[in-house]
Amino acid sequence: MVSSIHTNAAAMSALQQLARTNSELETTQGRISTGYKVAGARDDSSVFAVAQNMRGDISALTSVQTSLNRANSITDVALAGGEAISDLLVQMRAVAVAATDPSIDGVARAAYNNDFRSFLEQIATIVNEAEFDGANLINGSLTNGIAFLADADATSALTVDTENMSLSGSIVTLATTASLGTTTQASAVVGALSASLDNVNAALGRLGAKANRLDTHAGFVQKLADSLTSGVGNLVDADLSKESARLQALQVKQQLGVQALSIANQNPQTILSLFQGG
Picture 1 (cartoon, rainbow, N blue to C red):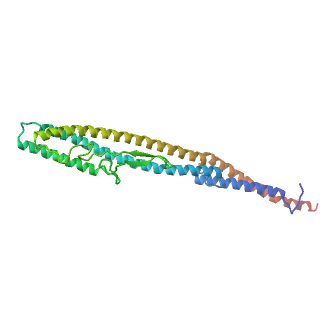
Picture 2 (cartoon, rainbow, N blue to C red):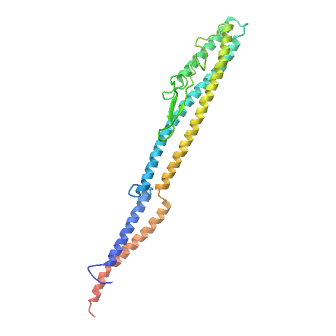
Picture 3 (cartoon, one colour):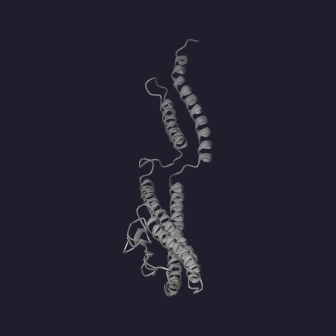
């Protein structure tokens, strides 16, 4: 090697190696501080692009989950209302059957009729109040049902059909003017109550089946979102145990590089010894 005070090849080599070590150390420290091995497009453009697309899908699935949760809440309220109506119909049937007894007096019949009319009013109230977030599945206000998001592309939907349980309808056939005022009226009411109870229970079965489908799909969407989240993590998350070990190794390498540069910078001093007298 040429001894020169103008060119110090050893120092340049040590400086280049130290610069590489410092760059690697900066990268490792960035991974440790952020938790990402790919925090931006500069780190790995292709991986970052894939991860960003997956993050977009995850965000969209969050919106789908929100829609399905709303669907579940609306359906749960409708089921609660329908079950309450079914319970009332059972009680009304007992009252109506008792009112068909020709031996009861006018006072007893009036009491039965008052109870019956009270039950009718309760049904009407339940039908109108079984609403969540402006949606009511049992009062006939949603003629075509209500659709909810089913996928991240918003290309498919799950529709929950309505079950109109209003009085004088196709499910609850009891008229709003129904009465137990006479034995004949009571007998007619018993028949209407039997049909209405069967219809309500069938409607509850349909609503329950739809609620189960919503639950199943919501569970699938959650699992899909979790899988995508795990996939993004596999792509961009840093292995902190490895980065910690690498950090310690690079810190030692940096210290050795500084020492090597210091030694290389002292080489020109040895030239002076060549010119010292004997």
